[in-house]
Amino acid sequence: MAAMKPLKIGVLISGNGSNLQAIIDAIDDGSLAAEIVLVVSSRPDAYGLERAQRANIPTIALNRDVYKDVTAANILIANSFKDAGAEYLIMAGYMRKVTEEVLSAYPDKVVNLHPALLPSFKGAHAIEDAFAFGVKVTGITIHFANQDYDKGPIIAQRAVEVYETDTLETLEARIHEAEYELYPEVISLLAQGRVHVDEETRTVHISE
Ligand code: GRF
Image (cartoon, rainbow, N blue to C red; front, side, top):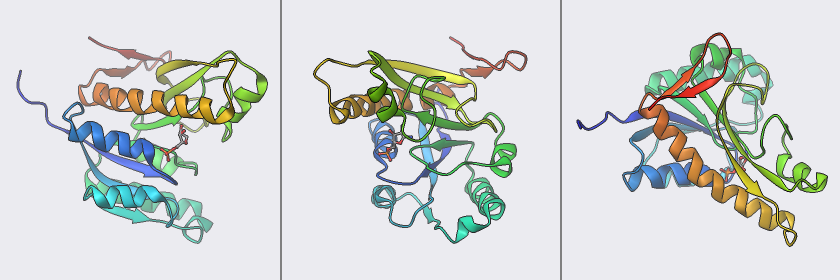
């Protein structure tokens, strides 16, 4: 088989960036044919920026002032990723909403990672909420972002069992392990052109 052209991706972060790291590692070990062309952080103090710089990935750090004009911030984000040549945008712990300006520049090409099995436990505290509810199975969802937050077409999900002995911390750790495995796998499916959104049903099908 001819070598696949690496998929050019942009990554949006706000914090630790451990999912960004998992993507960097998968690219490094050859399991993911992608290239991260730019990392944008909503915060200047995000540790993920250091991870990107260590991997020689260009970065842009935004801050609270920039987001005072949300539209301008999102135009800046869209233009920066376009200029960098990103084909897909990967949100990895990005704590701001992407708006119309980004979504229309990347239709069905903005991917989000949510640490629960959507449509359960939407929002910013999904792991805590699921744990507090006492569910016996939770998990992770990777989906396309659209205007309705946490409601875009689902690409992949993985279940994570909640054990009797779990604390929030141990559950969180297993959720993250699942994320580090599944997110690079999904990006690899995107790189292989195997992810298709059905226009009518707005559901995702993965081709062979
Ligand atoms: C992940 O749990 C992700 O699901 C959630 O925020 C966390 C980001 O962690 N949206 P990190 O910044 O990738 O370490």
